[in-house]
Image (cartoon, rainbow, N blue to C red; front, top):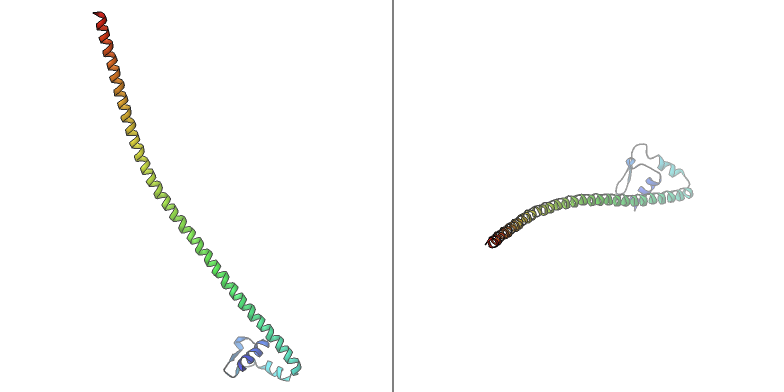
Length: 154
């Protein structure tokens, strides 16, 4: 592929991406950026080929590293977003649990107040009944004593 070969040579010679553009069959360079091609043309092919092969391999390693870094960065971003969502869910759950607990406490408190009022009324009724019973017993005892005194006097 000629375009790939031209790109590999441009990368191997460390030409900035802003200084060249690839067409379908040609490499377009900005003015003054073609000096590296003239240097390559004057060099001995036996020294140029290993140099280009090494530069191309280095370029492939850099691209692979960039891909790995990109995936790592994307993974970090997803993990960060997941943690944020988890924290937001925890905050929402805490708010819901607090609201539920407050409602349950209000219902329990109302039921407790009603129960205490009912128990107080029942206790008051029992006390009134007990008092009435004691008063009736006392009245009966006093009445009995009166009758006994009357019988003794006779």
